[in-house]
Image (tube, rainbow, N blue to C red; front, side):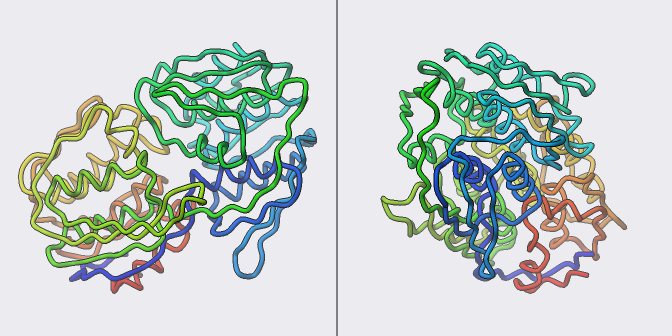
Length: 433
């Protein structure tokens, strides 16, 4: 139950970046030696990736202060005894499929009902072209997925749809291939894999939309452990930015949050809509990722249009952008986002339905939605998250501006990415039951 609030904001840090944490677990697990990791995201998705790497031989443990220690395998991977359960993590499943394609193992990966309803065919094609055997045993080309690794050959692969997960899957497989594997994107997507691989000294080059990695092939991997730090997750910070943006005079500062240019398109959207946004970089040139402090101050907002090449760099923020659009003056148009229909829920249909429960004027489109605001929000008796963490948190922010308390059903899903969300909401002055 979230009570309406005269939200004024505050200052906070958010948990470690989910995308970066997944990739650190895999790269550190392949390395020789012990990797020390600060601010690894201790949420369900990333813990499941750690457990999967442990089943492959990479032991890990957290200290009392939350730091993580990963004992790498040096590329000497064990064949797991049973299926690897990735829970709700599409990122973990797709990236691990690439990693295991080049190893002499046969592995089955499964997950919860949501994960087993998401398409995996888009990784099957390039991995089989490289020489792996991929079997999708779920309905309609979905998980569970069986991977039989083998001797891989390098490929040139053009992504049919912009996807950082598919790109990263192929790059992980490319580590083990004979020759140089090149992936060409239709538009630029988040580049955490490239940044982290470069930080490990791997032979990876970027030329515009072409990313190439020289595989180790029969020589075997030669990666050395190094220290890592996962900055705060920008997608988790987005909820507090939105909470401030929609309330004139409110101000929120999120410290040490990731500022990767392929993740921060939301900031441009908020500025277009009229919010004040300030950024102060605190990372150094030695850090694998850029991070710093973001301050957002609320103003009267106006609608905007979002689409095209902007979409891959704010795909996870679209539900909360829809919330902001509901409280902005005029029309907010979201297009070219059909990918949202195959996330943890059909985020287009679910967001449109939930916004209507609050009295929002919203029209669902095949690839997005149109919202006309501002809305004098009328609180429904309850609203469903549909088991989707980003829907649950977006509804919580919308509820701050409602006329009555709102009960959000099925909120355990928030543990997927932001276990401390409700505690942070309370720290910012909101009454949460």
